[in-house]
Length: 289
Image 1: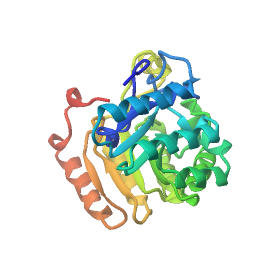
Image 2 (image 1 turned 30 degrees about the vertical axis):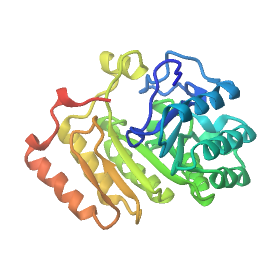
Image 3 (image 1 turned 120 degrees about the vertical axis):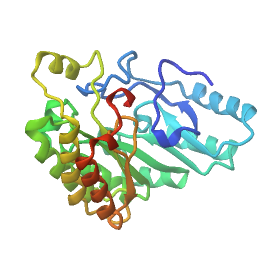
Image 4 (image 1 turned 90 degrees about the vertical axis):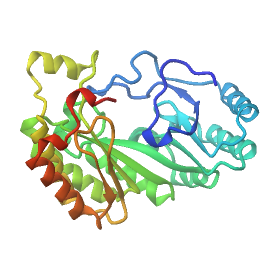
């Protein structure tokens, strides 16, 4: 396959066919993120996209999953997205799901009729970054959207029959916003009731504003015990029945997984055990993005 720049995908798309539909991220100003800084956002020529799918059909005997990269495929015209999905369905009848990243902005420009048509044509799930349910954190991190709008767009996706996977980042508020970040993030998850909830733990990347803030002392990172405290506050307030909860990314100190709300008590016990025995945590040098 032909790729421009570094390509990122969710952990669950490790075995998916990845085709770039756009280049970069349409927002690309989040203070904690360096993912797409090397390239300007652009729509990839449609014929190139379709040609990549034809090349993949000649290369791979079986394609069970497709991920449409880069950071925000939904910004393309609905008609072009229909063509892409029709091509996937024609070339890969064995394909079980097609997914992509989505932002509140790209979801907002899609009508509900368009979203339902995208679902009918095979777009089964989108990944959206909440990052925090706390507006103070979102503003500080230059997310570009407040919590209410992100929640509204998540609800819109679910209402149109597309599955929703939402991520947030432990530690993003620093020590002074620890409690608000945890509680208000749980409230946002509850309001969306997504199929999947994913938690990462903050890691500071070079060439980001956050990196500079940490270096000059204007932003303080959480210690591992504080991360556990924040995680417990969040988990105990989650009320999203049926949501699959995953906190097993390489960035996390503690691995947690379960289905809400039935596994919440077991996850809280795991957090309590780690608080009493920090050796259960992933060593700092083993964490990664």
